[in-house]
Image (cartoon, rainbow, N blue to C red; front, side, top):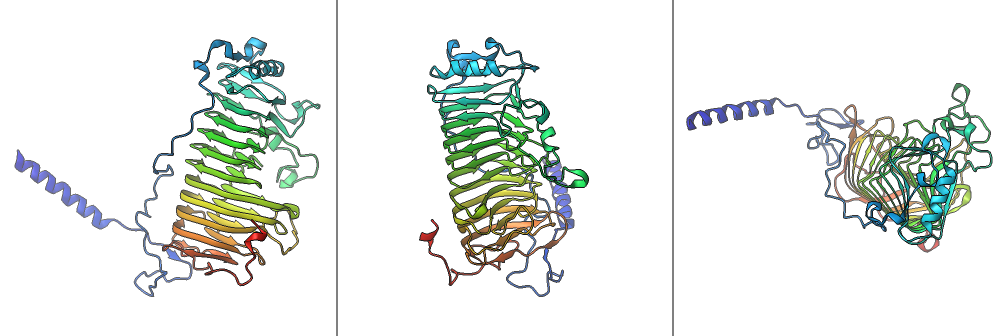
Length: 478
């Protein structure tokens, strides 16, 4: 019996070695290089990267995300029944037709007045409301829990004329509040996306002038110690969720979805907001997965899967000659798939201020245009004038950024201001290969200074060493 086992093992090993000897590796070449890897080799020539012929699946294989802080309030099911304010008990019908706005406002007023109050939109109902402003201050530990479906009126024609078309749900001046649930917040965005004033939605693909206000689905304004988790938010008319003027935000296990071509449907936008954590979430939409505006600092993004989308963006900053300040942003252990951009920083000419202390680490990309891009000539319309002032971009690090890029655009693009160079760019363990084909595009750099700590694919030899001779004093910017 043992002899038979040895013979069987020998046969399996022989077959494995035969298949391994017949395996074909996939080689990549820089444009302009000869395709014979044995000729004209140099220190910058590309070797076949390990396992490049078999890209890993898009799901990240990183170490677990650090333990999330506990929610500021207990689960509603553990609360005393007197603290749960079911909107159906306040007259909500939940048939998707009736206007349930008065019931939600009454339930909010009651929950706001007690500690650990819970506004509950229960499972099995579809609630329709007009614009609602949920204002504080309220007692600590307030929870807004959506287990059913919550939605606005279906498009601009159904929107009450007395209501603002700039936002739908507004949470204002609140502290220690949670938005959660197992349900769906449905934006009914399609009629808004088709307005002729939206990009390419007019006749023959044109964009027509005219009123174009479209509501942000959820806005948190001037609030602190917020938690948003577990919900599915989809098909927003414009931005899905915005934090403006907030301090202390925790987003965890959120799902955000809208079609790839839905205009201006950013997943999460933060502006003038500090101490933010966005974790373990999936975002697929028609604009930026996450966009970071001016006045933001201490932002940590981890475990996010993004795409199709426009990637994770800082900016745009400095529009209309304004000052912008962004600092201490970390994006790590993330996946970006089928997106128009990957990791993007965009600023307008004529702006001022600074973007500093930006760290990207352990990012997996699949079929992404502009995987790494700094664009200091951003312009959303034709004929933007050339201007000399610019937002100062410095202290950027890109470590372990790997995957494939869409060959429509260069994989790496550092296009910095003529007069205010980008400085202290650190690149390490970058490996970006074409999604289709074998030619690896060289990066583009303009007035960009930094170092390569390791060999990268493609080599980023266009980065300049040291600091520019006309380097601006940091004290003038940050």
